[in-house]
Image (tube, rainbow, N blue to C red; front, side, top):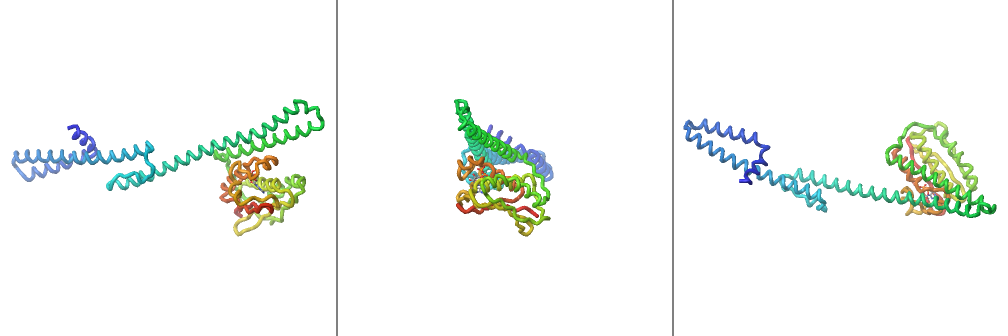
Length: 341
Ligand code: ADP
């Protein structure tokens, strides 16, 4: 009896259809016969038939709901390894396809969240490590100075200068971290406009003249068509070019750093070329990762944070363009990107 009650409960969504069917059958019965006894008999038959009908519809519906619930429970309890393990039978094949794709999406979402979590943990670890290095160095120099070196004219200025240089590293790191967090939180708003490339590049290159001269490196900005305009966020593109020229000078011991603008159809290519250390093939794809440096000590010694090219990559992505790198160890590197004319 309780099974019947349960099946009735499951078929309740079809209540109005059952009532209409019963009424239609009963009307037919009245039309076919005038005898009250026959009508009562037919009515009883119709009621019995309907009970059977409602019971079997309810049973089927109950079974289908059970199968669907099991599929959801399996997904919820993480017992499925692959979507192929989900099977709802022939009659529910459309729903089965939907549940399978939902399962796949959930799986990829979870995998992405886990990856993100891991990236965050790694990032935090890297940041702490990067902070520790200059802070330890500064502490070391200050301790030595306090321990008596402050009165030793042979070393005191040198130690203060070294501590100061590490505060510069800290400052660079802080700026790059602010940029990274702005990019991550979507706060780095771009403002795209046409800008004159010649007027844009001349002051940037001039700012680097002292740094290049100090290393005896020739810094050359080749002639640019005076009317040439490119489309982009001038402030952010300045950050990109500044980073490229700064890296070119940092990682070049002798020779030259050249800046060129080439016209390529509807685009203009800004190119920074150096005759420096170069980068091995295996490292080229990795230098855009946060904190990846080919030579950590060298990068730190020249005030590098390992974040510059990661920021550059994001900025260029926001411009729908990307950095192209050609490099040969020992010969030099060439970094360039296209912008719309
Ligand atoms: P960093 O602050 O260390 O310079 P970047 O993200 O700007 O960080 O660059 C990542 C790494 O790529 C550098 O540490 C360096 O090893 C390598 N690199 C970048 N530019 C050059 C270049 N012009 N020549 C040789 N190596 C370079």
